[in-house]
View 1 (cartoon, rainbow, N blue to C red):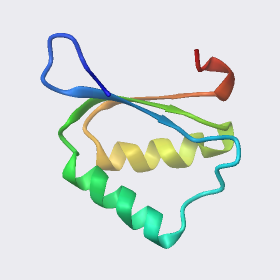
View 2: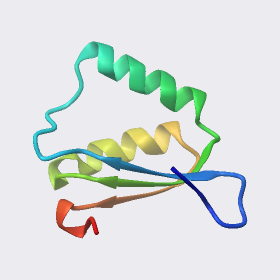
View 3: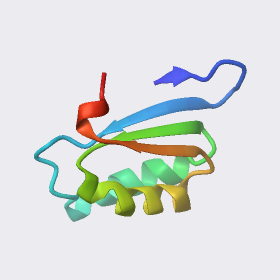
Length: 78
């Protein structure tokens, strides 16, 4: 996690690996608690994953975070 220049909010990179198939109940709950606790922490989110997840993850993240959110395909990860 890196701090955004000139801001007290941080940036976060989320990588959904090629074998990512979704969350089980325990993992979903853990991630949801983290998201709620850190709603105001992040100013920018970058999500990398298969395009099949783009719409779902972007909509969910948009509801949970007041942040700039961008989705990238796996081939765009440098």
